[in-house]
Image (tube, rainbow, N blue to C red):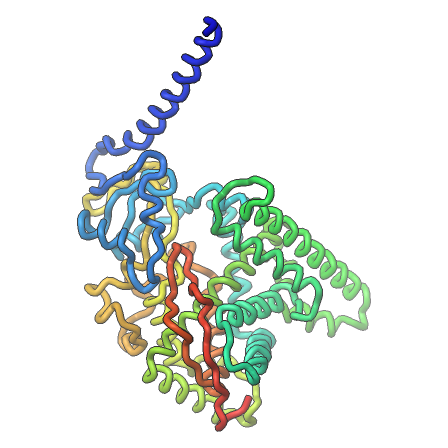
Length: 493
């Protein structure tokens, strides 16, 4: 071998060895960390680079903590260290520490999802934004939700779409409920946010791109043409373009209406009737932030709400007593309406007390959201624990929701527990907490409650086979939650 060639071989081998050493040292160096005034929680880091990520993400029933958390909590306690998503991490299954983390957003901790998530969601998405940007987006969201949630137009849209979905079941002995729930929630959120009906061409375009977007959100983050991740990034760009076109069309319509004095009354009605009209009037958000806000609304209103619906229907099918009490509650509400087909209103919703118990129990038992990502902004000391600056922190909600020391009969679906249990307590955080608590949670509950109102009065159902909600860590029903449905003869829509 020539002398020059041998030099290149030495350099190449040296580079490879050096890279391996850097990876190994970078992985294990945090284990040697010794802070002042506290001790880093016990735990293990697993393999270099990958750490224990694959074990942590191993699929399991969403109404269980899974083998990883069970094993680590048994060995190290409710707070332990690990190496997840390429970073040293403190995992918390402790309700007090979880609450402390969630309430310290922006002070001691900040949102910190893996970078590939940013590539799909966008830099100004409320889900990944931090600091003043997140504060502005969240304030706008809370304002819009407060204005929207009790408005008759919004409630009528929800109910009409629920009735349309259920009407389509009348000649079907079987339905794939995950698809029906997604169809319902997508139609509701697109109608409310963008003013689009299912029949409009933009709706089907957005749905097709949105499904591509969702598949990429949970895929391997490789931006190579043809991969689910790359297609998702491209789909987000197309959705953004579609939303911008709708925004411009709406803005032009407002200008035309404002120039026509005769149309003032009509314009004011329209201006007060939908989400987008209100959003266009928000001066604190840039155009890109408004578009991203719409995408966040679609994401939250579509996937999370439909999954909650599926869990409620699944758990009710295995709890005849809860289903019967729920049905009686809704029959009573319907009997108090002047006409049988009168729309539900906000006062009716406030009467759905047991319905709220069922929804809360599905959230606790089924765990729509398993955990959230945070990063320590400085060394944090809490009850003898030290969380080093720069480390990731994962508050795990599932472990708290299913902890038998916090919830009696924690591994059972029992809605009646909420007759005496406070849903705002530290041991129940289905939508997160603090300044990042989901601003649309109330809207999701209204949608589920109104759908249930018509479902329990008009259909009986049984689940086909043994289908369970599985955490990947995102939650889904493996077989799509197939329901055998039978219309109730004693009532009609």
